[in-house]
Structures are given as C-alpha cells and as structure tokens.
Image 1 (tube, protein in one colour):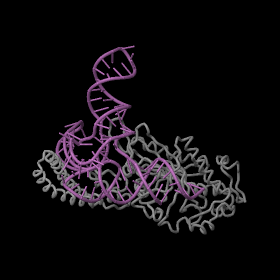
Image 2 (image 1 turned 90 degrees about the vertical axis):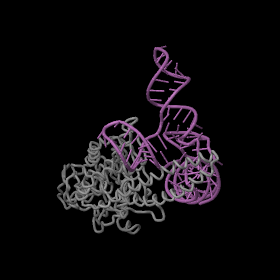
Image 3 (image 1 turned 90 degrees about the horizontal axis):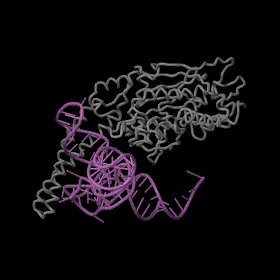
Length: 426
RNA sequence: GGAGAGGUACCCAAGUGGCUGAAGGGGCGGGUUUGCUAAACCUGUAGUAGGGAAUUAUCUCUAGCGAGGGUUCGAAUCCCUCUCUCUCCGCCA
C-alpha cells in the first residue's frame, strides 16, 4: 500500500506507473472519494467537539444540582448525537471504499526497473556456470525420476490429484538434504536466524503481505475456517512483526525458513504439466529481511548474492534477470529472478525470486522502527527471496547431473547430508 | 470440547457512568545537590492514526484502555459478539 498523502499529491505519476505495469486500479475514483471523505471528517469532528464540550457541562451542572439546565442540554445533544451517528455511517462507507482503492494500487517501480510489457522484456544481467554439453541424449527429470523410482507421479495423482507427487527413497532424501543444506548455509555463512513458521495463516496476514485481496484465487483456503495455506513462508515471517515498532538496534533482521508452500495455480492450466516444476505443494527455503530504508538496495544485492551462492555451491548454471515493469508483481519495487538451466526445457527456469518491497508491505502490515531514541517511527523496508525453491532444485540436479546410464551424481556439497551417497542408481 | 480468571501506556498496576485531561509504582530522559558512585529531591515520559491551520519550527481538533458492535447527552467503566493469554478438566501427536 502506498501512502495516502503521496497518492493524493502524485495522482498523475501513479497513473503513469500503472500504465507501465500494465495493471488497472480504480484511480480515477480516488480523488472524488478522498475529497468527500475529508469533507465528512471535518463536519463530524466539529460535531464531536461540540458534544464533548457540552457533555462535560452536563456533568458539572448535575453535580451542582442544576438538573433543569442539564436536561436542556441533554435534549439538544440528543439531536447532535443522532447526526453524528448518521455522518459516521456515511463516512465509513467512503473510508471503506478508499481503502479498497488503495489496496488495488501496486507499488511504484524503482527508477532502475526496465520498462516492459511482459517476461520477454526482462533483462539478463549476468550468467554463471557452463551449460553442459551432453554427449548422449539427456533425459527430462520426470523420466529420470520414474526410471530410478524416486518420483512417483501416478500415486501422487491417485492420492491427491494432478500437481501432487510422491518422492521416494533417495529422491525423498535428496529433498531433505537440500532443505538442510540451504538452511545451514544461510544460517552459518550469511547470518540469518532460522525460524520454522506456521503453514496456515489467517486473512489479516495474507492482507499484510499483499496476497490478498487481489490474489485470493491463487491461494488455498481451508473450508469452514479463516485459514489460508501459505503460498510462501514470506507470509508468516513478515507478519511476525505486524503492528510493531522495532528498536533501531534490532535492524537489520534476517530470517531464513523452510516451509511447504501451497498454490492453487489458477490460470496455469497447461503450463509445466510434466514433472515437478509446478506443483500445488512444494518446499522452499525463504529469506526475509527487515532493514533500514537507506540500506534496502544494498541489502537486495546481498540477498541475490546469498541465493546465487547456493547455486554456485551446487554447481548449477544460472542467470540473473532484472524484472521489467510489466513482470514486477504487485508488491515489489525491484525484483531479480534467478533462473537455473534445465536441459529438458533447453532454457533457464525461475528458481528464485528476490524482491525489495521498500515500505509497501511494511505500511500494510504496520511494521515500523524508530531511527533515533525520540524520533517519530518510520516504516522499515522489507525484502525477501527464495534461497531456493527445493522442488525445482531437485529437478535441476537430476537433469544437470545425469549420467549416460540414467544414474545421478550427487553434488559434493550434499553428500554429507545424504550419508555419503555419491550416486543415485536403479 | 467443558469450567473459571484475565487483556489498561515501555513494564507492573488502581480504576463499577461525568473534576479521568487514566491514580500509584518501576524503568527511562532532563535537572538540583555532588570529589566519584550511590542516594535524595524536582521534573518530563501517549506512542500512533486521521482531519484542519500554518509551514518545513509549530498550533489545534478527532479517535484510542485486546477487536468490533450496542445502550447513553456522556463509556476504560453497563450490554452483546469475537479474539488472545493463563489455570483446571476432557481429548490428542
């Protein structure tokens, strides 16, 4: 959410950014609703002031035994009270509408964000690693996984439906090794504090990080309750500090967490239907930061670097993309995606997404800090990034580390996490 | 799931309809005294959100005692709903 006063003073600028993003918001209605709201506030507050003053007079008169005079004021104030009630109701209608409008206005892109329409306009800013040249016909992870009996798509479908998969044996162990490995690296080498979050949250938390109200159809809701299954650990972790004023000394706060993530994938029919690239449930290791506003872009660079470190240690080729205005997402001011090379796609595929939200989430979630002991509280900047999506990392390892006989070599850094296993074979 | 007790400011805590503009204590900031520390005394301590007037220093109003409604001229206080915490019972991994 953007600042009310900022929107008021920069309405044309915001229209421009909406156009660059290719999104719509009922911005034309804003000025009218905002003006009407302020008019009503002035009127109702004037009446409330009158009521407060007169009411205290009643108290004094009654104590002095002047009941007749008191009754006169009471009769008069009865009408004022009715009027206040009426105006308060009308005002609430405008305030609700104004909030609805504000919740639909996306973040302002940082000035360095390339202007573009969709993912084709994203810009590659660096590549790492060498794409392997196979001297045999490489297989896709869905074939490798089934042949090695470490991925079981049929039983996933039997038990839960499409986009659910069983991992088995060393596949399951590889998943678990990656989770531990990534958590350990971020914790011990990059200074993140590990947390293990709830996998279900209520509506306020989904609003706080911006998944709601715009993207309700992407989330799973638990019927008969107010719980949503988290689409990412970003939601519970960012909301840990909701409605809080942090001490300046506490910043920056770094958290890393593993969680399952649940996504309805509405509108993704027919995309990535094979394999484990796009599932309704997947594991992810997520990094979340709360920082001083002046440091947030430096922190974003570090965040991207932290994610890249995992791919380097795993020896997986990747590239870093700067997301254009049209592909930035609703809440981000700046976003870098890291894409890993997948031989089956003969292309790079997103495996991490690192964003700086500036104060957009913090304003929604009311997360502030006090720059100095007696200064006013200001919004922190929040950032988060995957470090990394586990399922896609498994797919990338299977495909990039496959051997001609269909076996998989385990990257060296993972072997200690797998009891020294060096290869997955039939 | 059942029964009970609670939620007041940074912390503890008083407060059953109007001099509450929320007592008192602790902590923290400032001051006096002081060789230093300590102590005593004085003093400040409601952050926040939203209006309005000024304008980059301020002034003023409204809201706010877990949340949301209600009663009333007036609610921390009375009523209803919800929520969280604690204790006991039941159930459970």
